[in-house]
Image (tube, rainbow, N blue to C red; front, side):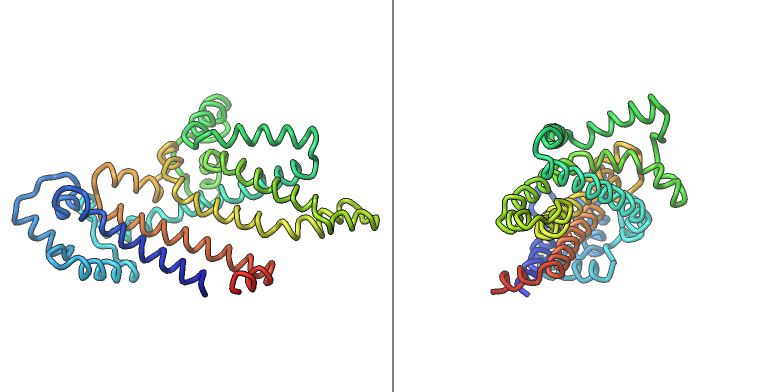
Length: 309
């Protein structure tokens, strides 16, 4: 219950910050919502009435939050369309990109981390050095490298767009997903390696080895079972962080997703869209963390009882 309260508090505080940002920056909030143009006073007054900016802050905030809960984020004054429709039209592409990158991260990151932790000598050293280098490679750099090598050079993958149909979309999203996942793979691998090595040094593993239990059984029954909690937690945090990183990958590969819409709307000062997407990203982050907590509780109920105590 305490964890749920903390997550709900995070959502409320984030929503206040997101909505209140336009009242903090210099200038008239109504002018910000216009998106950089200079309307006449009558138009500004109409915008204030439309977005309830003529009301007290908390009243207008609660009205905005109530609409957001219902999926109504108002109308974009730049695109002249409902904000919810603009986001919904691009949401599937972004969700596919995040899911694709998450699978790559979990499979490659956990696999490399297990190998590095289990084989501490040559293989472990090579993987550790490689993942350390990978952690310093930002998404936009890897996007340029992947395009130059696998799209332009070898011609294996398309350079631009998200494709149509599931198979074609996955094909178009391969390079963006790997560019988005690249540094996160290293992060998950490093954390997995640390968890595995810690379990390998534990007393129950020494006891199992003393009884003659095969190494594979020790890895499966003793090491992985006890290391699964930290690995799941770091994997969940990684997946949650992907939502914020999609903007870079989508812009680099010309993908018309929610992240690219956020960047374009920020450049056009379309504050209604920026507010809506920012709130959606916070909700996605909180929901992923909540699912990780539930999964951890199912894996190890004792940890939940200890936290509650």
